[in-house]
Image 1: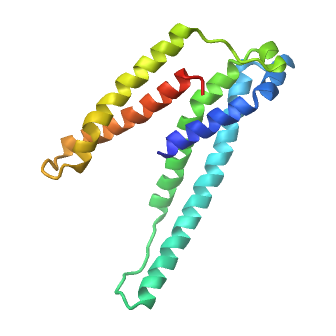
Image 2: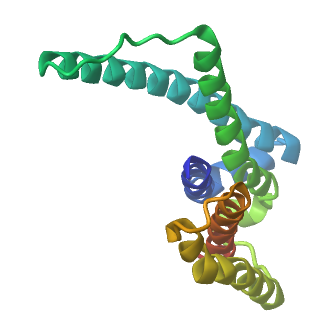
Image 3: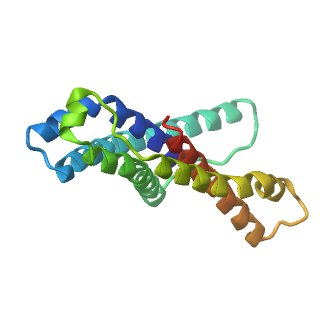
Length: 184
């Protein structure tokens, strides 16, 4: 879910900064330079967000532990090693990079003149239709079968859990594909 939100946020950022990125291209920046700039922004945001999230999460855990102890609920002490903290930060960085990669790639493809003039790039109706169909193909199986796999208590196997997770992820990809085909 975090990757989906990051993807959406960076899509909006690239759309809002089309003129600025086009101006960079007009002044001589290559596609690779523009892409690297957006990915560097994502890296900085990922580091700051991961560290803030880790700190706030630990603070919340300590506060809840103290609150539960205050009510007389027997709770053990909170212990967090360096390993889980590092894994949490790395996971945040990977999610941010993954979510920002496609918008950064699209930012590098902005035509300098088109961006400076404020015109949107024209993508063919065939591409939009193909994206819409692909989005529907990815979305429907998850919508039809995903809920029954998540809510069905009789099949609690690892395979059904994996299938439910994959169908849910496919639904999110389908929603993004469908949204992009509609021009949003």
